[in-house]
Image 1: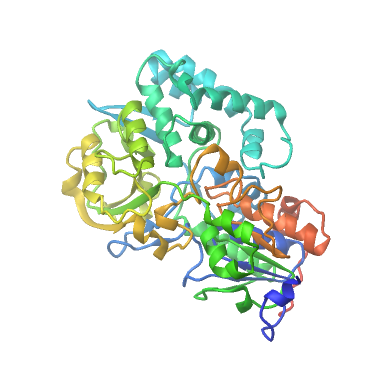
Image 2: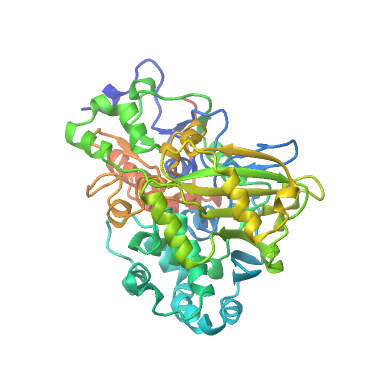
Length: 508
C-alpha cells in the first residue's frame, strides 16, 4: 500500500507530516527539517506544546505549568544536548536543592546538587548513597544515552549498562533496603522512583528513580524561566527557521485529512493511532494496540498563594521539587493502592515551587505551587483536599495562604492533552515489559504496518519525560526508510541549529 493512497488528495504535497506538537513531535519534525525536508506539523489545540504548556490557570499574573514543570532531561537528553536550548534563549534556572523529601517531626531528606553534601546530610546512610549513585553520576552521559535508547540496539556503553542493571535489580527487588540503615535515604530514593506512578519496589520504577537521582547531582533539576512552554516555543521557532510549518487548532481524525507526504509521524497514544488509522491497521496489530495498558494517573492541583509555603523544615524552602508522602513504607503502600485501583488515604503528592528560582511566575510577594497526586486511572475524584492535607502535614499553615486553586481530575486530563488517557501522563503502564516493548512487541516499535506511518509519542521507547528522543528515533527511521538518508539524526540537528546545515524552505 502506498502512503499517497492513505492520505488525502488535492491538499498539496509535503515531504513529511507530524501530528502533535509536544516535545517528541517537534523533535521528530526538527530532525526531518534539518535533513532538508519540507515538514508540516498539525496540532489539535490552539497552542503548541503538548505537556509543556504554561497558562494562567488560577488568577491573573499567576503562571502555572499545565503538565511538566521540572526538566533534568532537557540538560541530559542527547536531543537537547544537540539542540542547545541556551542558544535559543531558554534559561534553565537551578534550585540549590533539586528535590527534598519531608518527613514527620520537621525533618527532611535533602538531595543537594552536590553529591558529597547530600551524603553528609544523610548521616549513617551517607556512604551508601555515595556508593549507590556516585558511579552513575560520574558516567551520567553514557547512562542517559542508554536509558534514552530505542531499547532495540546493542548498548553503546555496555559497562555502564551493566552497572545500571545491577543497581536496578537491587533497588527493584526485596534487596532494596540492604544498603540502608536509617529512614531518610530510602525515603529520598523512593520518592524519586514513584515518579513512575507505579509501586517503587519493581524494576521499571527503580530504573526511573536511579536515573533521576543521578541526574540531580550530575546536571540538576532545572526550572525554565517563564515556564515550560519556553522549551517547545524555542523548538517551534527553530523549526520555522528551517522552513517547517505548524498549523494549530486542527484536530486530525483520519490519515485522509493529511496532505500527501512520504512520511507521517504521529505523536499520539495508541488510542490515538487507533482513532486515526484503526480501519487501515492489520487486525493483529490493532488487537495489540487495544491491549496496551495505561498506567496510574495524576489529579493535578495548582495553587495561587499569598506567600511562600511555610515548610516545617526550613531547608525545604530552597528545593525546587518535593515528594510529599512520608516514609518509604508509606510511599510503597500509596502506590500499591493506586496500582490496585484504589485511592490512597494519604496519596503520593509531587510538588514544585518554581518561585524558588523564578520570581516572575507570580505577582510580587506571591507564589504558585504546582502539585499532582497519584490516583487510579480514569478517576473522576477531586483529591485537592487530600493534596492540601499532605502539604499541610509538612507545612503547617499552608491552607491559610491559598488564594485560588485549579483542579484537573484524571478523568478530564485528556481534554488538554488527548495522550493522557485516563490521566496517565506517562504514556502507558510503567512495568518492565511494557516499558521496553511499548507500544507492541516489534523489532521496530516506531514503524507501524502502514507504509510511511510512524509512532513517536511517549508510548514508544524510551517512554515518558521531556527528552524528545522518541521523535528522534522515529524520524531517524523515516529518513532511512522513506528518503534513503542514513545520517545521524542528532548530527543533523546540531549542524542545522549551529548554522552549518541547510534546509529547503520553499512553500508547498
